[in-house]
Amino acid sequence: MIPGNSSSTLIETFEVVRGVLQRIDLHHKRMCRSGHKHGFCPPSLQEVTSTICNLIRRDNLSKHPSLRCTVEYRTNIIGCRAIPYRIRDIHALLLIESTDSIEYADKWSDRTCFDPLSALCTKGQEPLIIRENLLTDTTYTNVVIERNGEYLTPDRPLLAGTRRQYYLDQGLIRTANLTIQDTLEADRIHLINAMMPLGALTISPENISII
Image 1 (cartoon, rainbow, N blue to C red):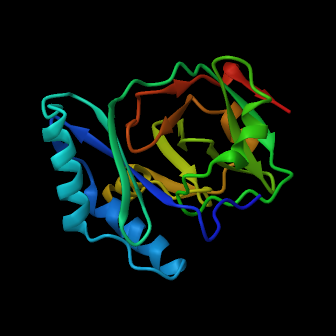
Image 2 (cartoon, rainbow, N blue to C red):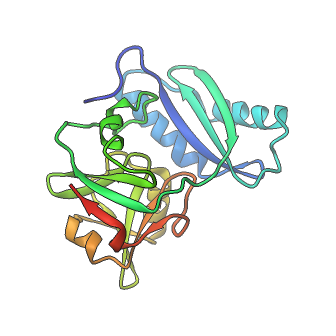
Image 3 (spheres, rainbow, N blue to C red):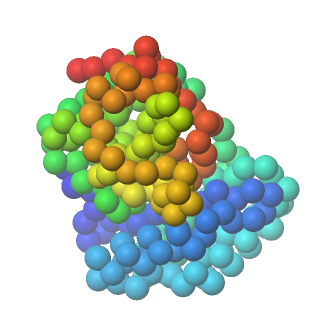
C-alpha cells in the first residue's frame, strides 16, 4: 500500500531542545526533496523556523528539555503542534516480511499502511519490516545494528531519517545490506529517529521474534 494521494499532506517531525531546533537543515532538505518529487514547492526554511519558534513561545515551552514538533505541510504550512516527548516502552521486535509493497520514502501524515503490521505485535513489541530478505525500518524508526564496536544501518530504509543521515555524515555509522541473521548476531539493536539518538532505545537479540 502506498500512502499519499492528491489530498494527503506531508509531515516533518523536529526535535526541539530547550527552544533550539535540531538538525533543521537536514529536515528542510527532505521537505524540499519530497515537494520536488510531488510537484510543489514546500514552505521556506525561514517560514518553518519562525512557525515552530512562535508556537514554542506562545505555549511557554522554550525551556522544555525535549519537544516533538510536527509540521504538516504541502505548499503552505497547514498545522504545527509541539508536545513533550517520551520514549515509547518498546522492549522487543517482531521481524515481519512485508507482503505488501509498502512505500514510505516520503513522510506522509497517512500512516495506515503500517496498521496491519502493528496489529500483529503484542504490547511492547514493534515490527521490524523485512523486504527481499533485508532489514528496512520499524514503523517509526530507522535501525542500527551494533556488533563488535561497529554500527551498521540498512542500506535501503523505508524512510531516510534525518538523524540517520546526520550519523552517516559524521561517520558514526555506515550502511550495509543487513539480514535477519545480523539481528541475531548483534550485540544490540538501536532504534533511532529525530527524537531518539543512539543508545536511547535498544533491543537485545534475545527479544527478537520472527514471523
